[in-house]
Length: 182
Image 1: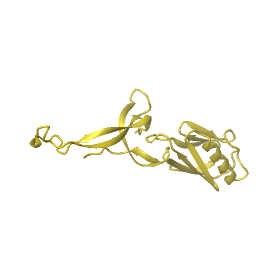
Image 2 (image 1 turned 45 degrees about the vertical axis):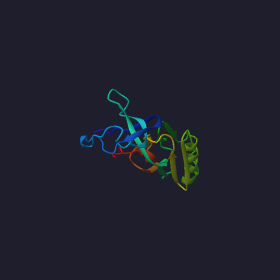
Image 3 (image 1 turned 135 degrees about the vertical axis):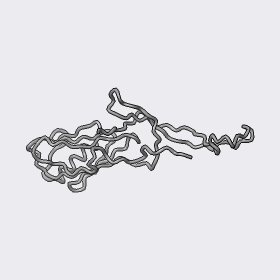
Image 4 (image 1 turned 60 degrees about the horizontal axis):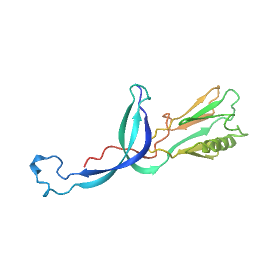
């Protein structure tokens, strides 16, 4: 069974929602001039598309909430020998390819620093290297799900382990939250 990924479309927007104290309960059928005014609450939404963009794709307004924070991921340069084939790191719409987008250094730590510099040149991404560990952040679009994977075209797995190992970056915030029922 395939899972559906959400992709944000456009900017988030805020709407003013009226919360009536009695809802639609007919036992509180007060004339308009006697009824208490509804409380108002700003709720932030964003149009989010689900599916692969094909015939069965759907769009929905999703409630956006939570604390602001970037999406995060990390990986380790586990082996500095890229001679058997390139490693292709996918970050959202970008591919970072060994010996094309960054130079393989003299050690795992130097290669990690070179990869972090290449990632930091991508729109919305920043990366830092701590020895052989590369930490990546993405800070555009609160509801975006950002692809994060690696394909090794050689016999050596150079960039491993990926954290998270789900195929997408860990969601930062704000993100899609449950509707507020008041």
